[in-house]
Image (cartoon, rainbow, N blue to C red; front, side, top):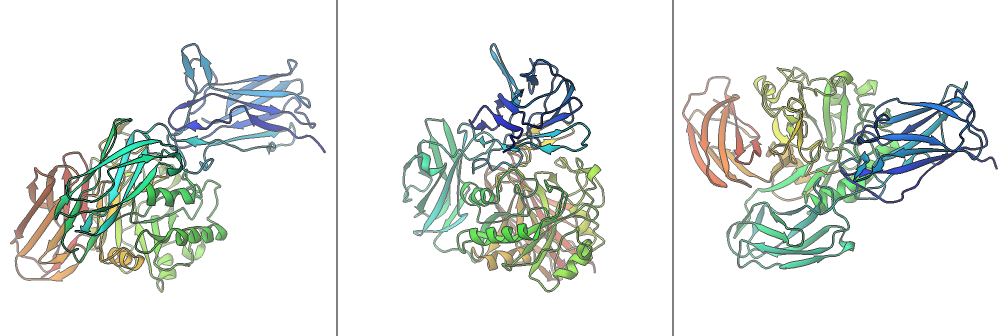
Length: 623
């Protein structure tokens, strides 16, 4: 059997997210040899914060050097991109058995000058799509690169040390009934610490509550733990977790405990994110596991790209991949415990990006790259007989991908039956209105923000979801768990920590959550589980009604930190501001301004003193 050129790596240890790695790659030349004029390309891990290599200064980070076992061979090398190295044999020939060594990073006295590792680890080993090392050879005169045997090598990126605990449970609970609490241990980049060991103690503001006071994590727990709690005292409560060994303390979301449950309870979701099937880092399974067990979400949807934008292989989502995505969504769906929706992202670089959500289990896919569904109107026509919703996001486009044609959403094109709500906040920033200080990644295309759509008459509910690419739905930010502000070039720790949609639903079922979303009983937060109740004359957010009287507006906010302000907006203008002091604020205010024939729309904007925000869906009032 002919011996081929192969690639190997000298380190089998997992890489630690956010740190540096030093390793050696080795090419062993096969029988075909590599004559002068040939080129060897080494593609190191790229995208999502992997270090961009350099070949000039061994004292600096991300240095790569090359050596050869055959001293008669001369070569030159250069970077083809920030992550690829090209080695050209200029004299002599690499023969069978010769070795080419690529040293990635360098250990110096008192310093480890390594290659930067992405900040995002996967739950499943070797699942990070971008943690790949590729090697290929272009033999002189052939004009094409051929991958060598063993390429690509997949590197394992694991979490760092425990730095954070997250504790989540139901926002509304009935006294004397048991509810589940989900606990997860994370590193500084919010990766799940799957090998965590140690004790965590639990407390509750309800002194009569029944629950375990301590748990000792074992490796087989994979960094997550669930327990049951029974609250026995009506009121507002929180659960505290403390790991004294790591000096970590966490507080749960606020919990409203009453003798009976309200007609509508708040359930939490993140319904926009990506796996390694497109341009994300995690596997499909990792996405659902993180959403369910780590972020503790009630519902989620995985919306991988349908077309070459964001597709790591530069092609459309195949029919078999779509079948796999549907099967995974069905597998993780558990009525009453964890709801999933079949979904994908219609990723048009001409007409803007929209997510397509289905209520049914085995729906078709209509891609933006297909001639029969390459415009919103064509897509809506295909979906007209389906229980589906088409939801725009970052409607003003994206600054960083303008060269790739990430178009704005044209609000003059309208379909009120299918286009039911819009994403106001994600890891890309705030889409509420032009000039908002949190428009981190947006391109500031005036006329295409959400307030512009409302002004034009669109009746859109307001929601938020992460657009997660790091495998952290519910706790995600595009850069670590924060957002990046290109104007200052720094990461802002007070913004964009998760992006959640809260819905008022009668129960946790697919049908009920869908009904709540469709009827716009939903609101957005920047990531914290802020409870927001907004009503007008007894009508819930998302509703439409007629009146000729003064409007009675009721707002109640239960924050995760002291509330700074609550603003009531009518037709995009602030008409009343309530200054807050406490975590729970409640008031009633009357709008006595006469309505004209056009009517008006109202919504609420909440700011906490820690920078977190929430927005209600509007209520539309006609005279």
